[in-house]
Length: 139
Image 1 (cartoon, rainbow, N blue to C red):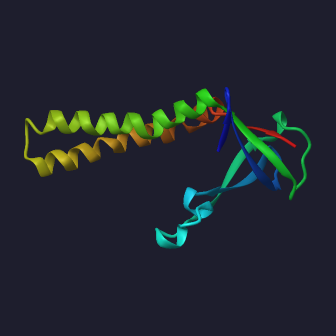
Image 2: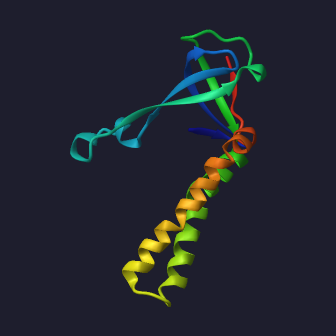
């Protein structure tokens, strides 16, 4: 994703439009795909990701149209924190604490099990998070 100052933006194609949502497909390309030496390394991969955008806040677009999808950079950083940093901290903290009370194997399994309530909580608050992490679309 390209980033400018306070915004993260990516170009995508409008896949479909439903009553309240616009679905934009963004093709994520790994760095290997554009590398000249990609044949000598691991094969490059591309993945299509579909982003849902509230229709009420978007300009008029049509399926097949190229659009720019953007998000505030601070929201992107917060998403990385919720998705990667906080679970890692929970995992490490629970492992350090539990290793003093039980064997290493049990402590490892219990530390992994500690992530179940965390991700369940994220899932339970997905509507709130959806309002927090807003994408916008520009033709």
